[in-house]
Every structure is written in C-alpha cells, then in structure tokens.
Image (cartoon, rainbow, N blue to C red; front, side):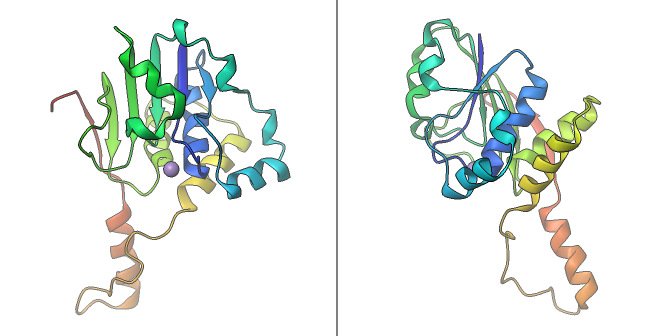
Length: 186
Ligand SMILES: [Mn+2]
C-alpha cells in the first residue's frame, strides 16, 4: 500500500502537492498527517474540493504501508503519526520537497528536491515531462499553489544599473526552477 502525506498544519502548497503526487501514484492513499492551516480549511469550506478522496489517518492501515510518499516535507518531526512508519523495515520512501536539507531529515529512496518557492512547482515539471494530463480544476489548484507564496526576496533592491523591467525579470530568474534528482548520499 502506498501513502501520500505532507507536513502537519498543511498549507495550500502541501495540499496541492499531495493532489499532484496522486497523479504520479494513482493507487496511493492520500492522507493529511494532522490538521490544516486556517486558510486551507477555509478553502475546503468554500470550494467543492472536499470531494477529493482524502483518507483519514485512522483509516490508514499502517501495517500494510510499503511506500511512503512525502511531499513538501522531509522533517520527521512534522509528519505526525506517520513518523512511526520510518522504523518499518523495507519501507520505500519517496521525497518531493523544496526545503533545504537539515540534520536528521528523512532521506528518500527517490528524492526530487529543488530550490523553488513551492513544492508543487516540482510536480508541475514532472507532470509536464511525463505528459500526464490534468483536469482544469487540478490545473487551477496547482497554479494557485505555485503563486500563493511570498516572494523570496521581497525587499531586495534591484542590482545596480538595472531598470525596473530588468529588475522584474531578474527576480523571476531568482525564483525560476532548477531541478535535480538525487539518490541518497549524493
Ligand atoms: Mn508547506
């Protein structure tokens, strides 16, 4: 059994990344590891998105999980009860994250890590590469999640000698994606 989860106090990027991951792992169960941020809870109330097939943690049979897919997280202390799974022998772990590596972070058998503003951006690139189609609703969610983030350097002045339009593209350049797939230890 495959399980897709994300960090506790899930935000929009976390939720959208789980949705995108489900496109890559269609048989996986999708479950939040804990509660959601207020903004995300409001979104669920105001949209029809509650219809998406999220499982409850209590409905996940931990004994049958063979692959854990972590999105927007690799800190073992922010995945709620799923931390227990990390002790399971032969558990396969796939990680999709945009947070810098910290001591004690979970290492995946497969890791898709990129220094981008939102984890969902990593998935958008993979979906595009593999030519996996998404519905208009899914596209909307992914787009919202990839833009609903603070600018990484909001107060940074433009480089000397650059006019405003160049500044804009320069900032875009700083947030543009660079992807790499790495294996543990690399
Ligand atoms: Mn997040």
